[in-house]
Image (cartoon, rainbow, N blue to C red; front, side):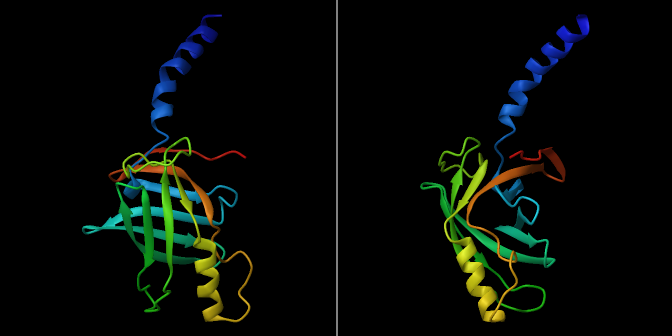
Length: 165
């Protein structure tokens, strides 16, 4: 009986910590698409003073780097691809919205829980069609909501979770 009570109290004690941990700074967050979570990874970071995202497509083992521009007044932003290591210019530009941990639109890049991409899939399909006339399926990341799955604080990980569907 004492064990159950101790576990219950420990759960209540940790509950506020886990509730707060569902939001992260944009440059420390890792996102995955809500319904394709294992195929694509989007990691925030900094390159000097420039905020960046690295998008990894696991099927093709490709990583695309994007410069991030976010408007703190509206909570909207733009990803613009930069030259990759092979010197190719993907010329991918896509808009996004910042969403908080509950999925509600926010303007604070310091409290992001989700990103909503309006046309990420379409931008990647256009890029793939420029490379070859019949691109392989599942090599273009989807538009829609991407959930934060990890928050890094400095060099370490503040928290990570695996979404359940």
